[in-house]
Length: 405
Image (cartoon, rainbow, N blue to C red; front, side):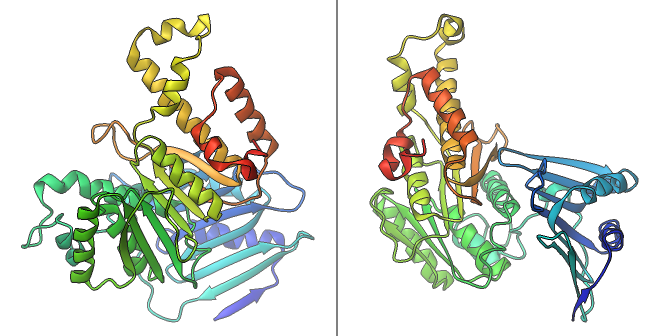
């Protein structure tokens, strides 16, 4: 049942506030978009109930174009934080609860339109797991056939001892993808995903299962890798699972020609310039979501090695490991900035704990705006000028895109 409620400003804010602070029923609240002529410190804020050491808290995740910040507050502290959000000129507010949903949209003239959807069936329960980090989007119970097929689970239903880290890594990957909230906009239509450099394809199988079985979306996933023997084995697993919309192809990233332009591009631990090949493909396709976890970054380091270092930086690079790490940092900074210039809301976050792998950064990019933002263009040009390098991704994109750089 949908009710359009002609509420005054104070009325709808009190309604939103009450629903967010209802610990028994809140699922999540999302604040997004700015009202006409206004500015906001955040592009999106998500509020959830979480349980930390037996205590119920409200978790606030704040997103802007460069980063996200997560803070947890007791229910008493959270009330004032909710009031702070309601005082900001967000255009859209959505509150999801176990009893229904509340949508508030503010028109160009500043009028709040409130749409309340009430559930008629028995409400469920709210997942209170802290930051979703301990919540398994995949579990031994809900994904048993898939986990057995890819070798993560034993025949008797236990996660293999030598696969515990991989299992955690998969779930962390799914959590980070889930946080982008990019699939809501694609709901109701086919979603096409390409996973470049899929390798052993644990994450390829996982993203298909997550989209198709958990989110119940019409997902079509393709894994691409140059190793024909791996691809053949993956296809056998797909056949045993009966997953008709997951397939694998042998080929180079730069040469891949999809039948349907992918909405989502993944490239996790694609080495050196293979990550740039994947990013360039996603940018050309105007894909809604691009996610990469860069591996080694040598190409820019070679350029840096041929350029005299400013005297102020010489002490830093006396040791080769610092030079290498600076090359990694610069490479990924250039990549993230190019994505922002191309209209992607981009953040760089930790993929998995450093003890799992030293290559633990993830770049998440969601297409939100047009190309050529002057702020990012200036930052990019200043960085290039200082280091006297030309990132490989810029060269890959060509004139159609480098006009903005």
